[in-house]
Length: 409
Image (cartoon, one colour):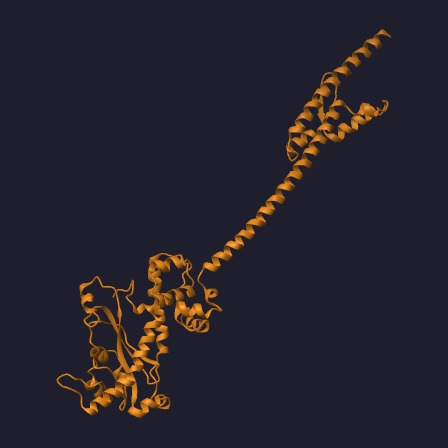
């Protein structure tokens, strides 16, 4: 009997020791679980094992399924524990910690929701502000919308009568204006830049500020687009056929010269900056204007439309030389008549083409003109006033006929 009592005492002591070791081990596992990430699969695999006791004094880890089976078999003979016994103090601590963690998660979630709402409100405010700024920038930009439905603005900046005429001219050159990928200006803006320069003769710095580009870019754009406009629009100026002239000849010309008048010619000069090259400076000096100029011969029909424009010549070149070498004589046919000023001493060269040149009579070496010369001069001067009016309109429509700021020969 004493033998059994001693063995029983040893078993009780052994069980108490094993229970204390088990509690310490479970405490460690719970603390490790609190600090472990739920996505750490390596340590989750260790936590899926349970502890079994193989013999007194030693603890052994076994897989979850076999350990649970052994525990169930071992405890099947014992009495069923109560609810208070099932809930170990360590388990109570773990459960309370889980509840507190859930409360913290809900608070963090509510705070994140408020933060996202504030962020969305800030995003909406910034989007509205961005749209308003884009609208203000678009209003300051010079583009098609600037001139659409505003013919007064078109006439002021370009000299053209309306927006339809502006777009018609632009359609002639838009496919030939270079538009590199990195260019800040669109083809229409480059076209408007040239027209504004020709119309208002704005300074390069002013144009650069208006279009937000460098002054050097303004000069390059002006030269490039102006060259395109010349080659594409020069076909607009056409020499009329003889039949068209006869059908539309004004009555004043009919009474004075019949149907023979083909063109009225004159030269007008444009002031330019003084060239740096001495040879060019001498070639552009005009003794009549006392300034460096370029000279252009213009021809108009009796109806008042421009039918001929020559290339630019230096102001020193005579009107006669320009007439002989500008290509005007090639357009004359036998029987045509030219009305010109006294500076055009071209009767001989025009007569060689079978045409006739009418110029006012000279008073040099004479006290007065004869009645016939006086009447002829009066008729020529009365009709030649039309070409002066056209030149005046040309000067008024393009203010660049004033001294050009950046024009050099």
